Image (cartoon, rainbow, N blue to C red):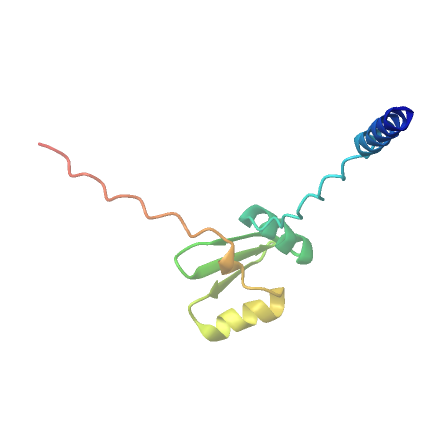
Length: 116
């Protein structure tokens, strides 16, 4: 009888010890947050202006006519439909901005005829 009580006590003690050891384990740390690349047009435009400090503004005037305003007051225009002009622009400024610049606004609607 004493042996059975002793084995029961040892079994309960072992179970309690194992349970407490498992309860004291710390949970694993959360996974690191994924690195999100910010590829929006505003960020790319700021990067372009930072890489080209002589440029104050750049925009499309017409569908393929890119206008570059420089800090010295001059304005350069590039026809991005013409491969030679596009290559000249990329050689000078380092990248094709037509991938992130918004297109030019649509032309205004024609005036409505006046009613008599």
